[in-house]
Length: 569
Image (cartoon, rainbow, N blue to C red; front, side, top):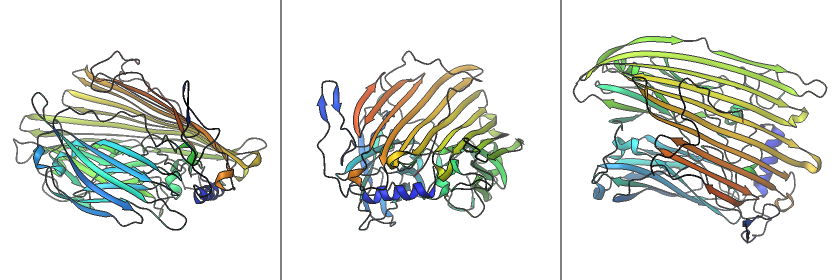
């Protein structure tokens, strides 16, 4: 729900948060675990997510502090990074860890960390309790080995506002831990030879590039309507956020003006989202703390880029109304070079694009039926090219199809406000004898209502799912299946001081990742800010193959998922 009325209510919630509540002791321990309080107090469990930690080899390691700062405004931290001499450059794994603390009153904020101009982390922050919280984010950044192998400037920013009202200072430390390759532990394989940030409209790549990926940290953010793009409606509909063509968005990348890649954006819900921060105090929505980039395989265009000239590589968000900002798209190019060639030649052999389909139909309220916007959209792109490398001619084909279906329903005064949506992003990359199939599905299903006594309730389910299969000569080499599902239900009284809101809420997250390399299955449950369940059902990744609870995905196959999403704050 992006209604101006709800936005105003949320603002009041943040203004008063923590000002009128005394601290409460931690939840009492009962015979079956922690006993939650009857309602939210002035303190709650530190934020926690159900995803797996980064697997490390257990070899000798070195830690480097990348950044340490207290963010009070929009002044970036600037420093200098130097690789640790003690760990050399033979690394098996490099792990970034962000540790933060904040207390008082504050909104959720968006931040980033870049090294040598290469963005290596995009993140957001939790909202604090009056007594204060700590949180952490962990990320595998081994793929930035090229950037991290030499001294670089460092920049970090979490834009913040601190004054008499918003008192939360974000105290953050970011480290890199380098795990060495020793004995049977080999250096990381498959990492790019070069990582180039897209800092201007053009760039020049090495002439012997034989593989090329682009990663785009695309986020709709900044507090405007594009932060909740999926709730926008056509101009003819009476709703707070409007867009000429409705809510469909698509992240696109072009090379010299020709479409080179399409993708569905992930519908991230930040920790103030859906008008109800009580949903997110302990368990954030999927990807909220670790924004994952959209990745494109641009190898079919490598021959064109290998001519030694500057070329335009541009990222855009289709569907954003003209003149409207709100999206950030920092982009890195990851390149692999042919050591046996000074120049890799080839060509773009095929470029086929369907006509983009986007229908967003508004139906006015009638009787007991609410206002409704039904949206259906889709787009397909196939590109193919070949390269004449020192180890033979390699043909690469990339086929990608994105889809979007959603129904947005709301009543008078935007109460109630409900949304059900599903986004799909299916991709097949065939390079030589190897084919990689990825089928992604993002879902949302929720509703916000204001009932008797000005009680605002939000019920919301979010899903992040992906099936991946790698084949060689038609035989399966590896597979994985991800299902990260969040469900929350929270209620509070609006328009009153914090100690009179009588907020209650539950949340659950179950993160399941099964595959040929093992499994991870963890469930978290919270009640009134108390973590009441932390259950793990299988060994951590890397502990060896296990019997999967799910069948291995095949291709083609239907991806398992339902619809899921709802309102922001």
